Length: 112
Length: 115
Image 1 (cartoon, rainbow over the protein chains, first blue to last red):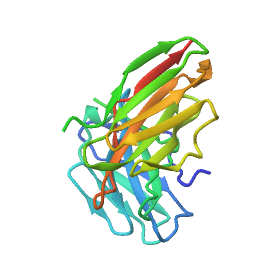
Image 2: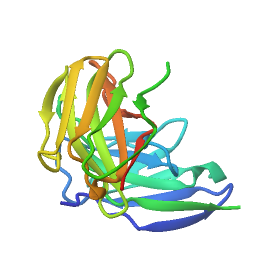
Image 3: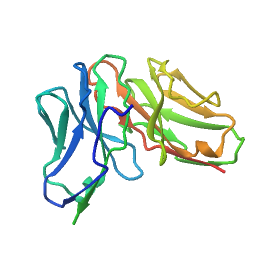
Image 4: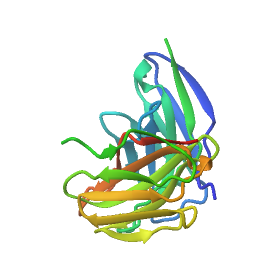
């Protein structure tokens, strides 16, 4: 059962902000939104997560709508190394139930 | 820290042979996950352990697959007998004990080819 919906692919010019949308209209109150990315031939890499407030770290910003039914991952200054598949995942906040269910993600291509 | 270590990185075997994939989680991590990635099915969870105990093995495809975690620093995923449809990249991931359980740390994966 797909809990998130993402566009299959996006392009972004190098140096510009990349905005990746995600819909999670059935998210429940105890579920977080997580973002991971997978660069070709590597294991997935954690980017950021949030519950309802906007979050920022050294890699990205996460904007979650007030109704929590959608979110946007922002890479502020995209570089060629940001070319990857980006996965938006909703995950239970319950301790001991940290499994991730990956969808098909968004293939982001950074254009020189 | 060396991160999550998986071995072998590549494995080519013939149908019917036994295959054993190995994973060493990051020291101090008490939860371990095995994932499989194929073009057709994407990235899917096979099984995960908390404190060496299997918590959810609903993703294990069939009885040919088995996973063990004899101690906190080692896990194996075994396929016996292997079939061509088992060809995939198998990832292991771990998360730390207690606080900071938000980030799963993935290994580099084992690319399995069954001929």
